[in-house]
Image (cartoon, rainbow, N blue to C red; front, side, top):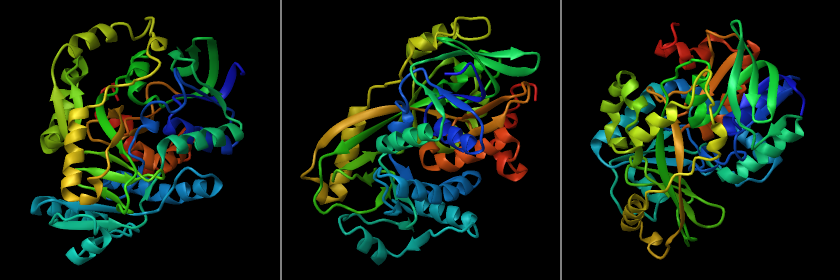
Amino acid sequence: MSRHYDVVIAGAGIIGLSTALFLRERGLSVAVFDKGEVAYEQSGRNWGWMRTIGQDMAELELALASRPLWRQWAAEGDFGFRQCGLVSLAGDEAEWAGLKNWLKHAAGRGLDTRELESADTATLLPQFQRHWAGALFAPGDAGIEPDQAMRFLEKKVLDAGVVMVPGNAIRRIDISGDRACAVETETGRVTADKIVIAAGAWSRWLCKTVGIVIPQLRVTASVLRTTPVEGGPNVNVASTRYCLRPRRDGGYTVARRNSSLTCVTPDSVRFMRQYLPNYLKQKQLLRVRAGTSFFRELQLERRFGPEKSNPFEDFRACDPVPDIETLKETFEYLKEDSPVFRSSRIASSWAGTIDVMPDALPVLSPVARYQGLFLATGFSAHGFGIGPAAGRLMADIVMGEATAASAAPFRLERFHLNDD
């Protein structure tokens, strides 16, 4: 390991690794640090979707641009990539109106998404006996095994010449004048011309070491894996009752999009003004819990900041306990609607911590206050599928080559929290 790089990246998830790959392809020396194992947190725990349906218009371009990149990577290595398509099902007329409205706004962007007639839905999903108000189908969407994809990407990044330093926490960013010039790690100081914070749910704390505020909160989402299912659906399925993806082991990854949990913390209060409008629109998608976590978080945040110990090495992995009761309920909904699942059982379950932003859009941005400092975080559960194109855009931003139109929706300044 050198003591100087063109770019140092904090965070070895899909965004950090994708950014590193595209920067290395431009000839820069790049090192990626992570306090724990590569992709141990949300990048390896997500649903494994590459989807376009339902994406915000600002993210839709990244979703579409990620499709050929995922296909290219799948031609280079086997990580369970299946272009099986995604069916988004509406349980009632209000949901169906929302899906049609999304499709109307997304028209003209090169989508392959189409409305399905009831007969088409029955043909595509003969295993389901529930009546749906309507459905959209995107045949170009895909399913991926996240853990295997991240092992592939890790090897690809290493083969490209990126230096990987797992198990080595960055404690703080060093600032000289108005420029970010180095990172202080567990094993010493490493200088860099440019520094990218892509630390997922930990980005808020790392930004705090240099007094930068990002209105980022954390949400916990639970997932289950079924035993193999004979004659199950061959497509990804999205609905408010359950979401699922066929796995290469014959089972299914199953989750529920309206069951994420967040605990009230000091940051919840601090950023209430930013989050409240979006929460009121979509509060059915999130459960809020109050309790002792507020005081634990208050005590914890006092350990982070400028001139503080910033003990990232005390928190090697964010490994939350899954909400097994909600998962069981979700699985029962699935078995009720699709009898083919009644002979299967829950083989395993897990949970992940998702970094979210008030508008559910990521921050892909330079930090105005400090030259050479960049952020790539807050993907709000959308990061895995759009990760390849998001990494390429982040590399363009770091190099100063991104167009204003492509970068504008993701700038940190949209929140006006850093005197910008």
